[in-house]
Image 1: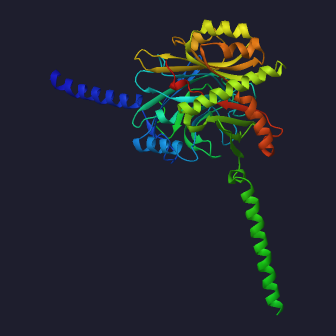
Image 2 (image 1 turned 90 degrees about the vertical axis):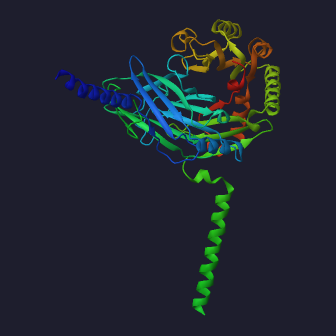
Image 3 (image 1 turned 135 degrees about the vertical axis):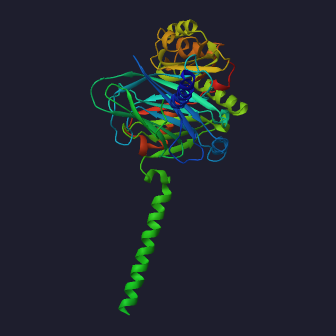
Length: 206
Length: 223
């Protein structure tokens, strides 16, 4: 009798484990429709003394080919990520997160994905006070991006005025130097204590 | 008859308006009319792109190598930097200028700190490079510019590969960096590209804060 009960419990445990695993390693197709942009994204949100926002990007093979082609043919586009710890559309959620480091594949956070190849980085004021810099640009070394490979980096922020200001959001975009627009890839919405609430697209953030 | 004259007049006016509109649109790149102004330019050794940042109104000018930094164009770019740096020192006005230093290999933090102190270099930020436990390349940018902090946020990396900041155009300042074998390139292009932006793109940059960003070949060097 006891043996008969054991197997359903075991099956349930296996299903539960599989479900939990699928939640922990969530990833999603990015928004935006540029041929040159990464197709998949996989983010982590670590809310501790500092706020760590980890990003994994994956180009499909055709995406990587488009990236190389755009960079190596006239007008020789220079592509970059814009990691915006605010709402760039409305210029809101300014001065809540101040970038202090960008980290690519040290130990931790890296344990598999490749190091993002860049030629240049820049920390800028996205909006609000000049003393709190919430915008990070990462200029890609396009020729070193391969298809079907995960590239990881982490931006660490100081948190400002926790407990006030209500919900906020951070955004991630892809652009190049020959356009005034960009391809919006996704965002995370967080609460007044910087805990993540949800991502857009859903399932992007772990 | 009256109607015919009226139609000829309307047609002529329409054509004049079309020609005038085309002339205005072709005078400047179409991006200017799309919202955020952007501009581009080129010299013999580099290309640059400028844009007005959306919410601050600051102008960001990024400098890129011609030919994607292939050895020949990179050599020409480095030589132009050396010439410009010597010319700046020769002016003798001991100006504080913004520069970007790329090291040939990762240099230990203690060594860079000594060089910074000897030359009166004012650090903005720096990038450390090295290998992770799996043998892959790893890098970490410390925006605090504090050498003591780098043990915390960017611990475990071999040394500094990229350094941004300000140095005086003197033999003791810029001159020492030029002469140091550990330095692959001290980039003074920011001085020149600011002047070019002010001359060639005055309609966009006048009255605005200009921020310069410059490519570095650090990823392709030996580390």
